[in-house]
Image (cartoon, rainbow, N blue to C red):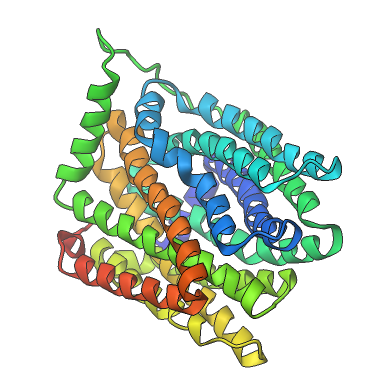
Length: 410
């Protein structure tokens, strides 16, 4: 079947299109909030690099604390109600940020606390989201379906930060966050229209939460390919989190670029991500899952190595934009083939636990990396923290090159 035929076939799947639309709406809002929260923390609340790192870590802390349990709980029930409930609750949580700002009650501790709650809801949403897609499309279409979702993610990352930068400049960060709250509301309502039937989950005679968690861990960390893929991904997320915190402080604090130009940098990155998502399916079919993942992991340190070279001049802005372009190209190039591989080799009864295990530990690495990145940036400087991250990314790519991942095929 041609690529065109596959694309048309997915578009004729009404539930997949609605699922895709809901994802697109919330992703645009999330891209806006990601930048808006950083701008609120640094520009409005005067956060230091360490405080900015704590804020970033707070969003992902629930993945560290509850991630494995969330995967087991999601595998116990139908996933669509989890998706709808999490979207509506996240809309309510984000709406509290502009409310607190307008009443003069917004502080860093409150912002951090709200991000912990938001992250907990996102944890359950993510576990259910990645497990629901295989119910909508057949196994042979998973890479293409994931590529469509990643194209939307890349488009949101290109469009969202640009809008966010403009919104923050015109109306301030809190109102920009309100846009994301509305996006989650719309997403939840779209998901409520899905008609794909989910089979009731048959409970075992005796529930053993610890045993279910251990079963998910064994599946991931004893699998010949999933084990090195998981470990390499954990290290990758640790390093990019260090880089992300240092990058933010370099751009907004040290070099003095405003929120709009900061958004432009991420918009350029989104274009790179869109290119990566568009190439992922074809190059995955041409070269195989493993080689694409390995190549993408080598691209990441190339991108972030450009950032420490930047100055406040126009050439510096160009380098920072190029850094985001290459980073997002690398991050999204391998995402559809990696996700398609993980979904294709994992039994449905383990899908939630596999996804939660991989994603939760990855997000836990973001927690540590954000904190470490903030401390390193304060102690050694933003550029030194970025070089440390680049060194770690090179080591991660080297390990992935000599692992079983390079032989992975869908």
